[in-house]
Image 1: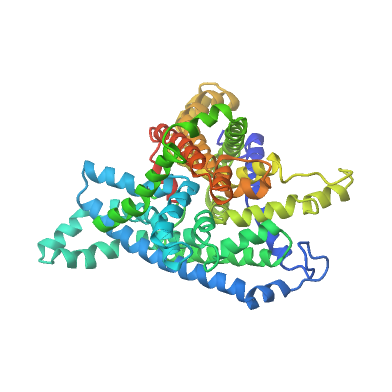
Image 2: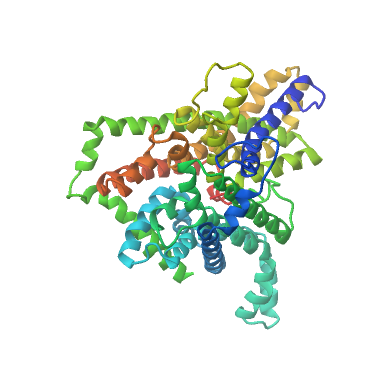
Length: 272
Length: 267
């Protein structure tokens, strides 16, 4: 059945490509729609126009959304990365039964359906006065992103040779110096991966944003949500293209920074 | 580590537990919210819709995912790298952009209807969104990459000499596949089905946008209860059911694979 020339295999390979085409091609529709010269959602016939992009980048509303999303994603990724990395190192050093339980609790935000997280944040943010604020969004997204960092950094740590740390300590370096000069540099790919995943998570997060952002905070996905519901303005298509472009840029940075071939499956970060 | 732990407990775990508690305490202490499950037929209908949609989504996602994973495992070089790249991209594209794309493609004046009408295959526009069909397309589209992951990992671990042995002992390709390969990939199929089912259960964006309010699933109903009718008790009760289902399935799944392996790729 691994016979490359058999008919069955050729058909199967065709189906696999058809499956991938089903995954990727529909998402490209936003590109032509965003270039339509008309004022409603349509395919451009003949001429193309950048009108909707100009509209997007000159509209104070859309621009403020893009700005807010960037700030929120940047800060929440920063917080999640710092906390997640420290925590991963801590759990790694004390690895015991208790640390497995703690790890389980810390992974909760990833497992609990977003709608339930959104309810929880909504209720407590009302009490804390964090509703519809930058800090509210940043903290919520940071909490949701921490498990990503924890997982990627832990995966890097699992490959880290403990003897390096011992060597460093034996040669007289303090624990702090060892962490900074020996451990951190060698888990850099995991930290970068975590940071970028955390950024993307916040950048296109919508469910929690629907609950805890309203007027003052209107992230890009939040504004797109409203636009999609109205389903008339092609500016939404342009914003969709921008949203995806930023994601692809982040993924490219991730590929360069971690500098390793993606998705070899067998490695213990699973996906990359 | 300690500060993060406190942060998660105080700002996340505790609020979540509070939500679950609300199911028993809002508007008053008792199990009245749970009694609604037996008296209010609309609630039962929502749960049933959720399970049906999740089940069909899982079926299609795993079948398509199996094909893709199988091809990827058996391919080498460039073609395989291309498949991986495309899969990765589709994995990370925002769920909003996907929903928008399907709305544009499948809408009354969308591309698909234009082609169908233009080629004479349809007399009048076919409604493919604001119904279960639209929701299913959108959900399968989102879930296939998730389905591929566990299958791919599982298939990579299979020793292909076993299949060669089967062939050399006289079994045909089909028999070898059904009797040898399929059973060997069973853990992957189970893990992948559970994963897709679990994520589908709590899905909000796709049903809400592509269902247009006509395909009400649990997550959307919960949000309506909170943001529109402000009935926290009912919402919390449904959230509790949802979470119990997710955790029970996760427990089963954890016996087939390491859960953290899957979630690293995409929240």
